[in-house]
Image 1: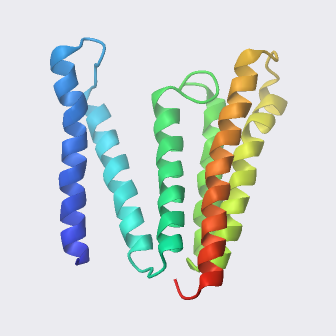
Image 2 (image 1 turned 180 degrees about the horizontal axis):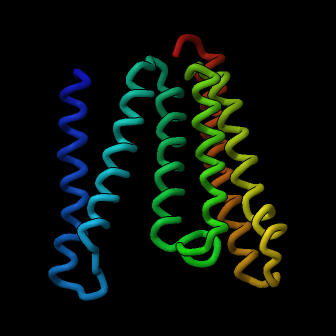
Length: 180
């Protein structure tokens, strides 16, 4: 399938996904998206899909494609979750801006690795470490009261760090399996 055809399919899939909240708004007053919510969601969904197409599209190795998919999905969930509700407190909590560091580590690592599988594995391991470190850095800066909410934030970050580790292990497998 050509890249143009894939991008067209991605645009259609993005439009259909955006129809879900649009239709839900007609039947449920609890779903209340603004125009800007739709724009941001569309950019995130289309951008995530396009990123996957551009990275995985050049791979012949299934492990590489899966690794890229896990990394791109983790990125989308990280951004979407922080925009929607925030991982640390509410979406307005400035501590949530620290998660930009996770994305920066992954992105810069991918550039340095030139998307080569073993370099990507190192970048994803670094993103996992950064993800795990975010709540602890936030606690050092903002010194919150330690309660169940803090434990949940650490657990959530551990889960996300696990996604980055899964991606890293898949990239490592792709690098040892031959050409990506």
